Length: 263
Image (cartoon, rainbow, N blue to C red; front, side, top):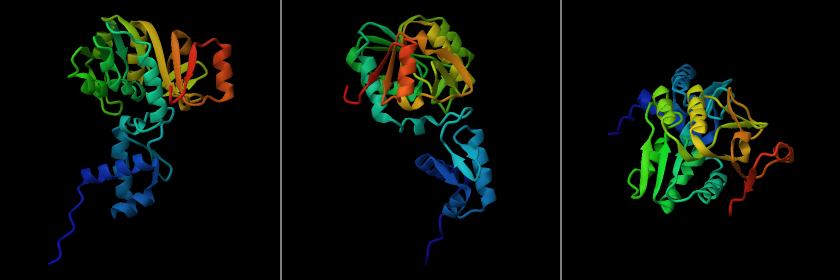
């Protein structure tokens, strides 16, 4: 006797949609309806639910996880992009740190690559709002981990909000390691107001500031400007910069270094 096909629950259907869109970057409504065996209207309702959670954005004819001026991609999706470049700038940043320092690290996917490098620098104090770093470093002997609390943001996999901001303002760190989603000219931008406030508070709470970024983030923009590259003591860039950006950073005397993957 043939088995009845297992019913796909609405929640499992959402997971299938999200996994498919994250794998492809963009998927059409028609393709999702065919894949799931449901109506286009059902797909539209599912996409609305995922968009309200900030996990994707609806665009004409389908859905995308690519960032826009007002939409920041899901942390898991971003963590799979430009991994070679991000790991290279993380290694370069780690070489600028010293045991005994208090290091503040933001919730970006670029700085999350520091998790495998920081144990080599113990004893060290790490202050972060990023859940990935918190989970990776919590059991490492010699790392004094200060986890910044607040409201959990599942898109950024991090804590933000007024409680997080106030906690940062009570601290003073030796070094800041930070990235963001978009750099236009020498201005730093982010799509999320709460994330931008946390980054601004971190900048104001650290003696030395190091900015980590892969080259694809340049000549992009997002909704909220929160800082300028001229506020940083060092800018580490992974990947190849186009000539226009290279000249602009040089003309404005930004202290930048292009980091090659094998550096």
